[in-house]
Amino acid sequence: MSFNDNVTLDTSQVRSGGGGGRGGPGGVVVGGGILGIIATLIAMFLGIDPGSLPTGGGQLDPGQVQAGGTEDGSAFADCKTGADADRSDKCRVIGTVNSVQAFWGDELVRYKREWQPTQTVLYDGQTQSACGTASNQVGPFYCPLDKLVYIDASFFEVLTSQFGADDGALAQEYVVAHEYGHALQDQLGLLGRAQQNPQGPESGGVKTELMADCLAGVWAKHASTVPDEDTKTPFLKPLTEADIRSALSAAAAVGDDRIQQASSGRVNPETWTHGSAAARQRWFLQGYSTGDLNRCDTFAVASVNE
Image (cartoon, rainbow, N blue to C red; front, side):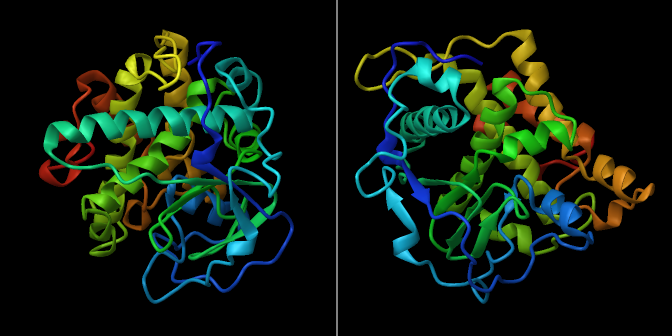
């Protein structure tokens, strides 16, 4: 999903994070149970941070994240236009954050709700969140304790090289949109339902993740109509079939059944925290085909797998 070359990127919606440092203590793992560093990464990828429970997590060090880049603003100085977003993973994240927030800001007005602007911390290596250390061993996440999304842009290389997703733009944009789906769930008071029963094929944890997949699909449906404030040009060009295949490849790559089969050769649905590959694809397509957030209520269906 390509950006229009002349749109303006708003870097004030992102912060840069310190690299290489050690974070504070994490909280309780949400949807855990898969062992090993890589498996832990997979268990948490596209999910809620391990320290998201109110009883866990370290304290945010304000010195480690700065709005709009480094103190002199240089961290994202090369991210100015849509052409930059097509060239650079970091700039693509920024452009996607801009598009997603603009979409939900307009969409929620229809429901007499107000979108609360949510920044992304775009970091290299490691940084500290209010939910604990952010790193590629955790993967992208939304932290409800500090209301921030955390993404290491280098994770997209891991997504492709280790987990089999393609390297298309929408695969990356889907990741960002999914995390902002969690931010929307938090604003609507739905995120806590993940903890009512965090594991199992029809658990609250799985339904929460699949809802975020669906919300990402809703954004994708409308993304080519969302303009930036400066040029009034849509951030993104219309989707192609290749774009949809790209997003579906990312969704399938992080299905619990795919992960378990690859890591242990066995599939145990009772330990699922994010949903099967087929379910993740299905719910993204549900959002994309309908373009309606009301069709994303995973808690209202008899089974998320049908």
